[in-house]
Length: 322
Image (cartoon, helix red, strand yellow):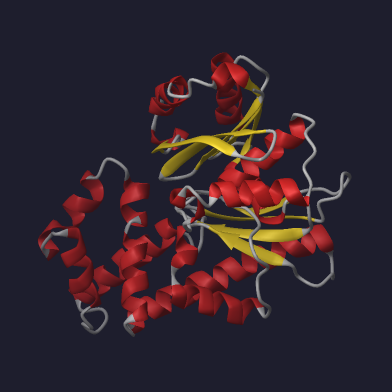
């Protein structure tokens, strides 16, 4: 049986799936992130993941969506080298946001805003000669506005202001400290003692969403700023790709699970998003099927979408990293 392999890795987790020519997913496994910014452990993690796919010798085409690919030349070259060494065939290695775009639009025009641990927009008219435009994704040092990391960092900044008396105490700081399980005197130790600051900060985005839904003004202000930055990123990408054509957009990433943020984002964008055709792992499989020369039409996409829906982890709004 001829198979294709799709892999999607973000800032928190990795999914790998195998599908047959009918569009049926025959295997799907999840692992930790393959984030190269966290050290070289991603190499052995990827090797271990592929060993857990016994059907690997039957794979005809493979697409890997990896964090940071195409952003730092040396990192991208190393990702390609490692994947090639581990695969029995020549693989396609691309940025994880690109395959999320492919999943969302399945060959049609659009702009995707992805807000997970990081953030980025990807846009194209999707014709064979149309360029793909990416905006954002500059990382946590000076970018990734509106991402889970950014939201977590803003939450910590707001907490410090309350603790200092630079802003009124509203209960927001106590909620953050309670979630972290530390007293005010332990906040710095938690921040600078964590082994994965990106992931640790990003984990606070869920709390901010909960507080915003309950009416907390500080949390809502943070998410409103996040929505404004994400809107700017999305529109900049679309205008570079499509000029003055009417915006056609969709979204992905764990931050977009926040009802309050999504309401704010819709208001700022000014039009409703289109239905995302496939989750990001589906985008990797879609690309792999095209690379394999399979007939990828509406019926195939419907079967793949239906098959992926049998694996709940693929259809939840995940926290993919840009």
